[in-house]
Image (cartoon, rainbow, N blue to C red):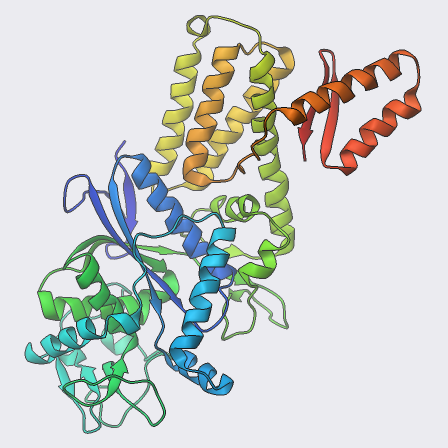
Length: 475
């Protein structure tokens, strides 16, 4: 089965074919850095982190670019309220973005361009838009893209021009030739950060920065463009227009969009997307203080990335409980390997079983990155492994192969935490305590034996009695 990706542009699953063999150029729209990131941002970040991990697992050489919008009305207004430079404010929240992304177990993108560092590229692209007859300059020095000069506007959002209305990001201006025209360069207002341009001092429009960054870091065409589905219109629609007006080529071959994280409550009668503007957001910083990265990742990845997802602590608690079944099995398997019975791995069809799990996992991921189904494959393994370990029918070689396979899967999903390294001292100490407890039980000193068990549990270590003796694991 080849990798299939749902392409928003065609509204269908398509076989993934790269522009250049073995290489993937991927751009994901980042955040406007004027505040801490929230769980809605986290969903997009985790989704595309997982996409990149899987593409690299398949052997692709991926160049992953995610931008920062560090020049924006919200940034300017908040910086003015704090009495600091807008770029100082955005730099603060970029630092906090990286702090929070590390709490989500996210690998860093290869490149994080900033709008403020690509002004020359943006100005050059705006000039080409004008030269090619798609842009016009207004009396104040702003530059607008002319919608009337293009065909098929609305191809990504699947709407006709007459059916569309301008979004909150598109401000009305009496000098616009068409109400749907959008700014690619904004004339500077008094006190705003600005840069010199052929049309006077100003700053980039929102949409143009991504087109210019893609061209600078990835070239005229890319394989995958990603982001939340709230960006389909107008942002991604306008990106297509800008780039095609300059290059005459399609911007991206595959457009991927994750569904919104929704919230119910705060006086709302229905679910609405998590948003700073609606005031119904929960920051990653606050959530990560209560839940570990693997719980948060499991919560997001246990739903297909395109589907809407309702946020709530009850859902996170469910995710924690479910993921703990995988984590506990993994820990038990690591302990089991040390004392597992010897056996000939080739006599019990272990290799065929391992390959069947691997193929089922890949089939799920190849089906438009279906992480929910991939996790179900892991649960099938967990159920079988728990049974085999309890019955002591899993030989050492087979146990190790299953452990290696879980590590392989976890390299993509990252839902099992790394165990803290130690020099074996803890194993030795636990062996002493288990022997001591067994001796106390033998001498019917149950109170002291139970005290050891209870004190260990308070310290985060659980003892489990079995017919083969006591086992221990960390909580």
